[in-house]
Length: 362
Image (cartoon, rainbow, N blue to C red; front, side, top):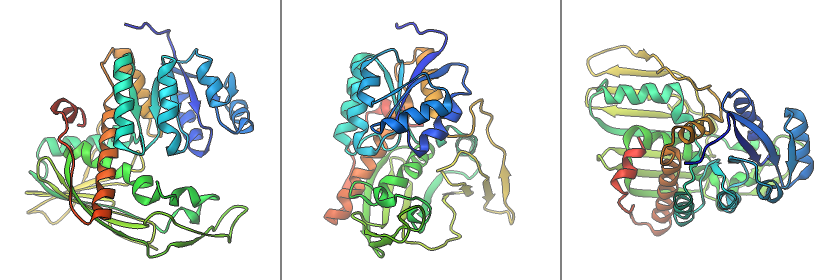
């Protein structure tokens, strides 16, 4: 077994907006230290290193090839995730990857196999399933607070990131759209709480293909979406829970909850799975009022990056692998099945997951 120093050494690969959230969490850890950062824009890497007192900065290939890191935290655009993660595995580093783990099931499965053969771990976002609201909801379901789950409804209803992001085109790429961009938060939470998905039906449309940037130096510029901007899917879990998932960048406003689970004896309501905090409520069948559910105790911070700390803990415990990598792979499987169902017009069946991997999802 590999023996690690007191602190595991990490490199942040990709110094964009989300990296600032990650580093704020990671630099508070007693078990992990960020010793390097990298970006294809070398100025961005050096500025990031200066801002957070990170010793080394450079291009991704140079930082990975230089060795000296135990964990590569990959926060680059989705199309680059698999190649960079494999580069990190090849130099003996464990990897943590922002969502999605890969763009195809074949790619993410290959990454998990390579890591397993090398005795290395793969962790992946989203990590909101590690936070207090998710843990509290999981405990409530396990103890029968709402009885046996029968159905669920999950909804990402938003006007689109062009309202706040200065370069929103990336969210409308043919390989992105609301399903691939925001869907992983909802799908990770659903599979954590309700188990793996086996069947999928889906349809999609684009009611606003023409978009206008509303902030930053290019405000007022128009562009077109290459991905569907409103998608509805009907998912069936292994335990025969029927889930309606809607992901849309076409909705001006809504009061619809982000995620509800309906059981034989009541209803459980969760906060936005894109965040690590928020209120969890439940109401039983014969009651006329809602209960606030106390959050489960957790030693982890309530911010992005706690998944990296969970990966570090898995490495330190000598675990065979990190559960979040398998959950993220299953999310890729589900998204791929949804895309197949919407383009073919027929329901899609996911290949049965290995039983041991199903158990790790929860």
